[in-house]
Structures are given as structure tokens and as C-alpha cells.
Amino acid sequence: MNIVVVGPAGSGKSTFVRNFSEYLRDYDVKVVNLDPASDPIYSADRDVRDFVRTEDVIKSYRLGINGALMKSIDLTLNYIDKLIVKGDYVIFDTPGQMELFLYSRSGLKIAEEISKYDWSVCLFIIDSEIASTPENFASIVAQNAVISLRFSMPTITIFNKCDLIDLNLNEVFEGLRDVGGVFGEIVERLMALIDYTTLRFRIVKISALKEVGFDDVLSVINEVFCSCGDIS
Image (tube, rainbow, N blue to C red; front, side):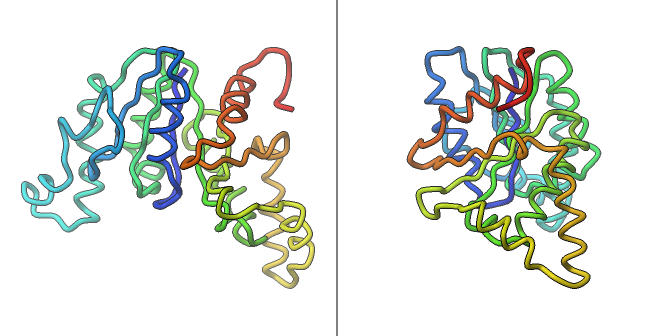
């Protein structure tokens, strides 16, 4: 199974990839770094930086950092066959700037190539503190639905850093009812998208740093493709 890890910068993606791959050590687990701008903090079985390095792209194409990041994703597509590897679980760590991967043509093509031959699932890693306000939570629900639509693969939202903040979703949901005016209408419409996410079945909270909640992550990944029914 392929596990594509996405999320905003600072959400803890790389820490999750490092520690979750160690958690899966009894399986044939492989790790692939798809971030051309950063050296991985784990031992990667495949590393895009062996082929494309953003700092070199800046010099070669005389681009600013944003242009170089976009160009790096385009160049990565040329090497995707060398970056795809087989295993029981193959974890793909995507760029820190999620929009580079999510909203670019090359990013979508890379996701398409990853999911072509094996079951694939996307893990959307979110900082629990960011998700603790009603407005942000509604935005996260919308992002979850967008990722599923863009990548055409099931997307599981994972709330990280539960060791720093105990995300109380009952309070968040109560707060959603208190958002008024035009903005309240927007929030209400965004929350309708929750039916297209795994959030309506299960809320997964973890600490990637302290390796808390990994049993739940593995369980929900497997249940996505379980023929016995929906996630529960």
C-alpha cells in the first residue's frame, strides 16, 4: 500500500514519516522523500534530491525561491519511475509547501503515477492547535475534500501534536453553532463537506514526536480498503 503524506509546513509530516516508518518495522516498509528542497530527517529508500535539488534549480534557471520550488516539482516528474518502489507499505513524504504538490499539474501527475499500480491512501497531517478554532476546523474539512478530489484517492485527516494540545472537538463543534452572519453561512456550507471525508467516521489524534496514536493510524489506513464496511 502507498501512503502519501501531505500537510502544511510545520505540521510534523517528516517527523511522522520517520517515526511511523519505524513503527512499521515488522513489515516491508519503504520511505520516499519527494521534497526537493530539504534533506530528509530519516533514511530514505528513494530520495528526489538525488536527482533534483531546489538550490541547484535556483542557480541553473536563475529563479527565485518560489519559481524554483515549482520548477523542482516539474523536474521531479521526469524521475518518478526511479522514485517509485515496492513494499508492504511505501510512505511518500511530500514537500513542506503543500500547495506546490496539490495545485500543480506535475504534482497531480506524480500522485497519479504513485497510485497507478497499488492501493494508495493520502494522510493529511494537521497541527491540532490550528484545528482548535471553528473557522480553521471548517477550512480543514474543505481541504480534506479538495485533496481527495484532486488526488483521486481516499484522504484521512490526522490531528498531530496531541501531546501539546488536547483537541476537544465537542467544543469546536459547539463553537461552529456560534459563528454568525455571512461568515457563519460560509462555515456551515463548508461543514457540509464533512460527509465526503473520513472525519464523520473517526477522529484520529496523534503525537508524531512521541509516537502516540500510531495504532489508530494503521487501523484506519487498513479500514479504508476493508471490504467489511465503512470506517468505524
